[in-house]
Image (tube, rainbow, N blue to C red; front, side, top):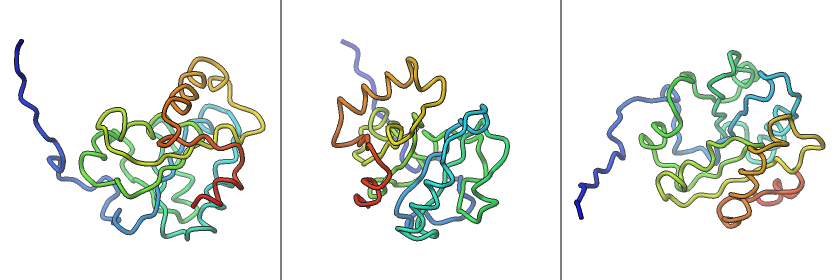
Length: 169
């Protein structure tokens, strides 16, 4: 059997995807989805505001979705990534997120740390908190995400209400 060398890429990429905003003091990262850009209404700004009221506006970072051409959260005064062209996997290799929490409605990026790199982290999905899901989350993508949440419930926590999430943090 052929042996392959294992190369650690941690901290090999020297750039700051959040343009000099320190991740060290951040409690959590909220992942924006492409819902608003694709024409689906979701209460993501309302959710971020409630999280910010609980943990403090300066304690969260919003990772803007790369297909969204308008940074709504920066306009509202939140810390965000400025360069959306850098893939989340590269950002993960550049900084430590092991003590952070991740919050999303349905972003697949929250599964990256565990599925790609095996790093333990806690991710909260608020998909089940929505009164109505966007079109593609009713199909195969939603089914796949729910399957991952069901298989790894201690890592990917699918909550039924925003209030239950606010009690967790």
